[in-house]
Length: 314
Image (cartoon, rainbow, N blue to C red):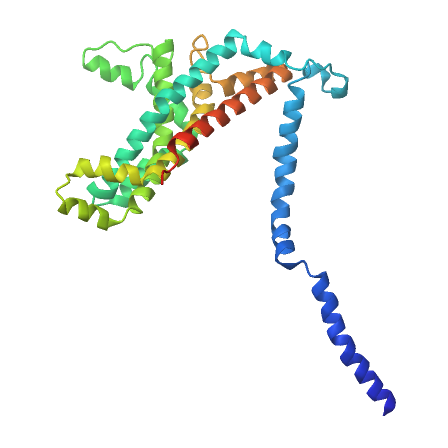
């Protein structure tokens, strides 16, 4: 009996002791949060942070394709690659093309996307989901298939020139002339990205309280006055998001010029991303890395300026 009493007492004493040890060993809310975040941090470090650090390091070397077997044997040239890239005529031409893509493509895409969102929000009442799906369809369309169709449509004897010929107009060599080739590439890019703008603007429009429009209507404000003086200011956060997203997309434009014109004619449609891709193909790894870093810095500068200019005001 004495032994049983002693055992029961030890068990009773060890139970809170065991729970106390378990509580000390448990990770707690902060530890649980770190457990959830750790997989992302590992993936980010392996696929983003480490390659980024390696890219920055390689921009300061003269590494080429012949040095891949012995990458530690390369010479450090520090900032010479930046001087080489930033003075290369081909890179400057691709940078100018990218600026044109951003300068024309972003505002045109946003304007069309906003007008379509406005029509879907307050104008079109019937079959609204169908129109929304049709407008968004180019975003999910296969870019290779779309580029082949556009390439055929804008050939010398394609449907576009045939239509113009029926009107008595001689169609140009769309993809063989620098100006018209740039126009076709921009047209394809705008066609592919307008759906994204439309969806984001539509979500912003539907978040504007209906009471605001009703109060403005009672005060005698017309439709377009409400749009410019009430809807657009209230959409400032959405506009900022769309502007940053579209700018990043157009700055990194690659698929459309590569598939339609391969950067031609005479490099008139080649973007910076395509120039970097070609440098990799030529084995100029240090120049490709340098071009990538320059493009990254350009994207960061544009995004910071847009965030400063378009941030919501109190």
